[in-house]
Image 1: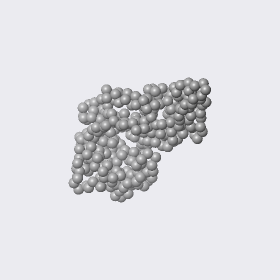
Image 2: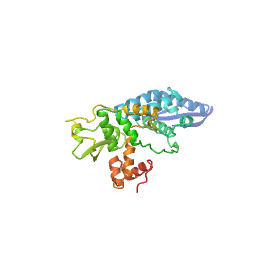
Image 3: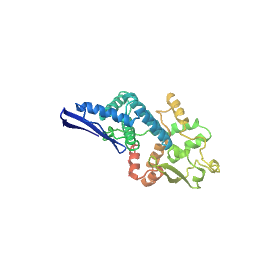
Image 4: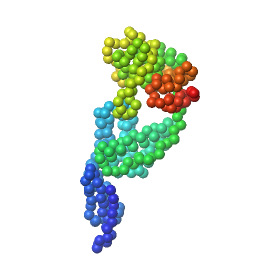
Length: 321
């Protein structure tokens, strides 16, 4: 992609040239100024590339569904795509998104977050999502352009200490659960597993002394198993002959969130928390137990290495040796 100049009998003239899908497009040397050549080039490129941001955002979201991306990542991408559409205009072509446009969007989002007292990390999420989108546009859609989010500096984050529900809060919540809800709650609390690892637990993965959980270490990666001690709450009568143990749910259960919201409004809980806070709680309990070494905590939590576990414990206020 270039603008070049030539000196003709009629005077100095400009022309443009760019490539798309291995094909070269170029104009004659007919433009009197560089600006005219750049404008003509942009119009030509848009005709070649065709799709607008709106078109490509929709295609990307459809592809995410096909590749079975996580619901959280899908929702996050959809949210930031919508923000970009409103800010830039849905009919803008991807080649028209400059670094300046990208920077202005991110700064606008960062100011909004600061004014509303929300964490700046969400602006970093926007950068990551849109950077990934433009990489997809360039690599998969084969559009000849530079990623406007490339090398954009992330904001410094000051992570808050993770909230650990008290024993009293655990009991208050547990009193309002029933049946399989209590078992799921106890299972997550006692194992420190991720909620979807529990939801996807299969009967054949439960043995007399151990339980095998599966998770993805990265997006689009294969499921990775890890074996942990079987919790006391999981009795033989809870295990079906086949299929999922917690077959009442197919996705993230929302019961816990609504119960805690009600308890917070009544002043019985200090702040809102969710399933993942149970994982923090269990890590806190293990981290404060001198008889459980760091490598074992790492294995139970499903971390790739102990350095990840150390950072995890430090954010809980635990400095385990």
